[in-house]
Image (cartoon, rainbow, N blue to C red; front, side, top):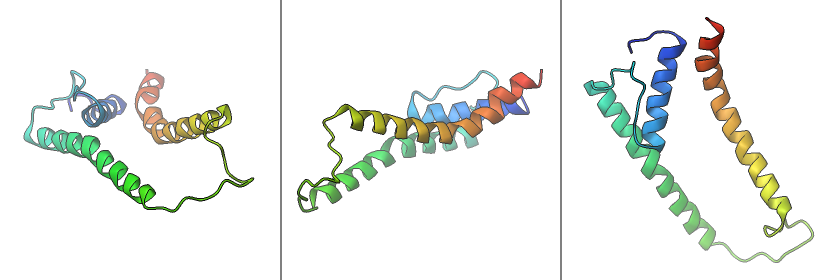
Length: 114
């Protein structure tokens, strides 16, 4: 890292997040052309792209082997807007709780430090 403190943290966080989910770009201040970063970002790409596929296939196999359960009064129908709203709220909540601490430590801390 050429930058220390919150900006350096943001550089490393962005590099690993981008490598695992996108095209592997990085901030200009991160010297990612070292052996350690090449190996670590390559592993992040490998695990970030292929591990979810393995988990989804395992979950699909598990769900395919289950018995059919009859619909009761406690069943949540998945064809109504209520399901979409609940699912969206849960996904946004989990993502927010996952990334908010990192965002608070990086860009927000850098902006407050000026």
